[in-house]
Image (tube, rainbow, N blue to C red; front, top):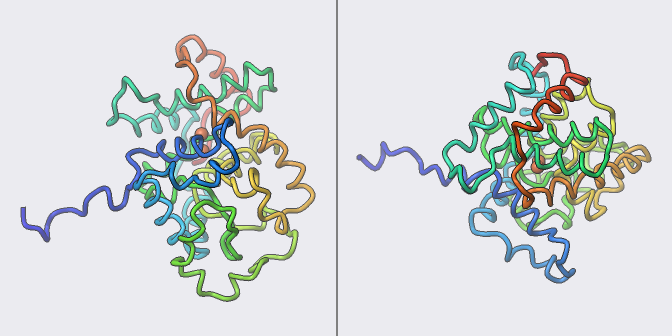
Length: 290
Ligand SMILES: [Fe+2]
Ligand SMILES: [Fe+2]
């Protein structure tokens, strides 16, 4: 084939072998038995693909990009579908990988929600666990990996060095805009996270989809579950208000289920599905806007 005609190698735009490689990196980073020093050496846990992924994410998530993507997706103009249709659609993400070793996306969602259920948490909490990664369908809409997953961080203000791989922010065009590089940037001190633009990804999208249907505690879990700099490292407190502080207790409560339920046994999907059908119908109408 003529060199010039050959399509760009997939790897260039998709440094992760699959989206889950980012989730796996995060759970390695926060392995419970890790010492503080091992923790700070997270770079050694990242393979070259993961590192390249963060480089792309940190250099291309600008405030203009985030505004554009919110405009594109957060009005939910892509039509009506049921939660189940979307879960089936998300499942097509892993079709190409080895079915023996990889859990399907639905299985990951169910593993998360089942461990929440086993701990006796309320029904809305279980449902939140089941929904939390549905926003990854952005990838199937054609979004690059760096706009779907990754630790989220505020744009339009100074970057915290509590975000992983902070060195990559130097090449973000926003780093050269002085207005965006003060501590508060374009925001008011303690304005509340609802007024802050975070880097765009699956958290924001699934939050928008669910916002009319779940209790606020669950919505915080959906919207901020990848905001590790804040919920794990207490960065960006100057942008949060009292209410955010209270709600983040729930984000923190949710996080271990996201991080550590993966290694557990495969859920018996057939046996538990009736429970989930009933649960979804309790909170959501048949079809919702996406
Ligand atoms: Fe997630
Ligand atoms: Fe997850």
